Image (tube, rainbow over all chains, first blue to last red; front, side, top):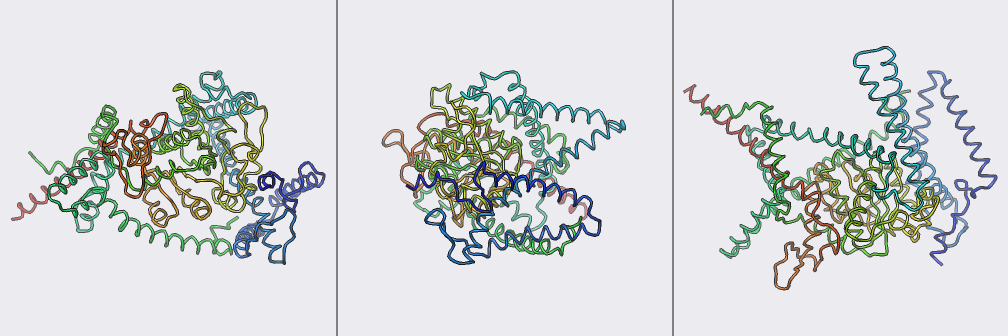
Length: 308
Length: 318
């Protein structure tokens, strides 16, 4: 019975109309028209109104999550279509039903950032090529790479998702030219360049540690000793050999206290009693700061958060 | 010899030494003896004791920039789950590339298993890829509220069938009514997405993490508080997992033989029953030893040079 209920479609609500129903289509069309009107309306809004508009939207968006947190979450209905017990219960159900849609909006808005990035990239580099500015050749390489990646990426996705019911393309030995090109561009070039760029950090870390890690004070000595112990503990082979040595010493002397001198034990003590409390303290500070900043942005007190 | 010169070695010399030394690491033996970290032991024991009839949720938030660590993590996790026939659902947050990178890992492990004559994992049957959720906070809050509504609009291909079906119509998620119905949620991350996930979901589902070495220290408060039941941090964590996949915990292949990995809090946890164990992390672990040794030597060298220079200066003043 429980499994059957799990398969049942969720009960219709303001946020969830029956699939393929006329009212759903009306709501979809109405939302598109409203969205477009809002979009173009905002474009033509006078400059002095832009800040209050942004502030209002920010406040309403934040208000939803504040109310969601404040209004008690209702228990799941025991039977489908069970009515709320009181207005608070009704409000709780409404917020609970609205959350997936609000979260969808947040997902879509975040995804729009990607589109905005592409638009910005195209604008800048096409202008650079047109005006033949310095290094405009690199802009051509960037745009060609982008078009190739998009073209082969989408072709590969369509083939794998819609034209391969038997899942043959899950095996790279069955790949066509399109699949191979997509893999070469994404995994063979882009991802490898990504890894190569990141690996350059090792050179800078070595150089920086060599130049800056000097024992000039008590604090820097403590810091260096801790770093040395933690680095040794990361070297599994060293930690293991050290541990074996301590084990032999414990057997030889019968003094079990020596077990505490294993590099893994000392490193764990440092992590547990020094590192973790320090991180926790920092996290508390960051949390309080984020809360204060969140309230300021929500209430429109922070100019940076709501500048139009 | 002028020891004070040790504190002013040209950085290009250091770069060449690093390049040569880390390349030498590729020739080191890949089976370095090890004593895994307690948090990694907890994670391995947890994975090996999961029930087979409940799915695992994997949030994969990394790309190839950190593949030395996180790719080893995902590979180890997939190998363990596949060897135990545990179904899983995987998605990414924040980084648009993360999903494709994770899918590539699953495909490569499937190909490796096919070559070895082992059962492969089929999309929509044994695992589901949900795609990318660009807003991690919204996705986490939504999953907490009602997972059926959070993922209800997502569809998947089912291997052997034409078209796409809603994810909750598949064998992987059919019985999942809330996020608590998953046996475990593992976040593999190279960033702070673990904070977002823990804040929203750790009281609803058992959570664990596999992260880069940089993120690992920030997991300690969550681990100590019990919000994370185990974690594997950095390349060391990935090697810990591979080491336990090969040797188990408190496990002796022959009676009377000492177990390679011991932990008082667990009984006998066997190694993975099939497939590879030592792989990517084992290949890189030797290089990590060399790189860290070099780092320690460089710091020592710089300090020796500084002390000698100071001593000389004092002597000159006298």
